[in-house]
Amino acid sequence: MALVTSTEMFKKAYNGGYAIGAFNVNNMEIVQGITEAAAECKSPLILQASAGARKYANSIYLVKLVEAAVELHPEIPIVLHLDHGADFATCKDCIDGGFTSVMIDYSSHSFEENIAETKKVVEYAHAHGVVVEAELGSLAGIEDDVKVSAENSSYTRPEEVEEFVSRTGCDSLAIAIGTSHGAYKFKPGTNPKLRMDILDEVSKRLPGFPIVLHGSSSVPQEYVKIINENGGALKDAIGVPEDQLREAARRAVCKINIDSDLRLGMTAGIRQHFVQHPDHFDPRQYIADGRTNIKDIVRHKIIDVLGSDNKI
Ligand code: G3H
Ligand code: 13P
Ligand code: ZN
Image (cartoon, rainbow, N blue to C red; front, side, top):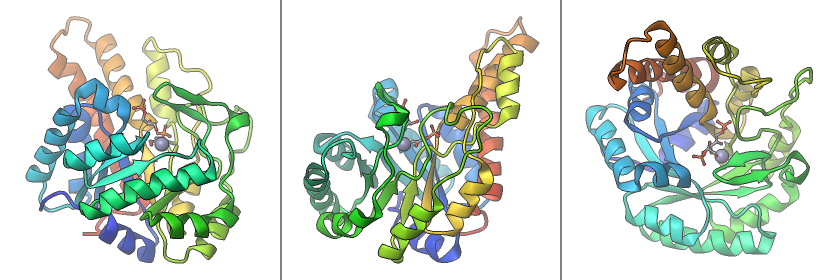
């Protein structure tokens, strides 16, 4: 099977009350860990690359790595998606370079500017058989070098979504309901709660339309502990409770973005390896431990959070 778009995946996920995991990739071992878990679980998969990933690895390497994953695992459908495309030019570059899905993230611009740029991307993407995710509302946290403070983040306004989707023609919509990027999403001692009422209001206005959740890492405390016990210093790292993500997946959310949890898994594996084997200096030994953790984390997400196992 060649790379696919998310159209069919989202239709089935919406009707089946589950979500597809969209996992960020930056190097070969991350692609391998994620894809092996998805193949074992018989789960559809979205592999996504941010601007930072494309700069770090070079977009051509990432495309070729994902194409290798597709060749090795023809039994599962795989989407290659641009995460947080900053403008039309970035989206066009990815569409021309073999991506099957792009996100145009103009959510920090005005409503009208967001519509205009998204529409431009949709026209070009659809003419090339590529689908488009857009965003309304803004999440707190860090993406590349852009840091949005909690005060400057804003929930999606449900009264805007119908006009936005009908005027842009986008294929899916990322909304802000209380998640945020990075490993420090909530203050210790608080009771994290996603705004399911906003999600429900949005989906009432857009029946059958796929909704996307960014900033959906849960920051597994077992990996934070391993990092801190092996020389790390992550203080008060807190993520989104998994039961709330499962609940969102049962509703209209069809795509759930996870990156920070993979970073924690990779870091925990490598830190632990260094402490346990101070004599090792072959990167294949310690990076493999990071890759094993990524595979374990993705397997757990697919089965216990997303519910996308055995769906192909
Ligand atoms: O949305 C943020 C993702 O975790 C990507 O992060 O921009 O540092 O690659 P990055
Ligand atoms: P996390 O930082 O919660 O993993 O979010 C990743 C994300 O939204 C990528 O677009
Ligand atoms: Zn994101």
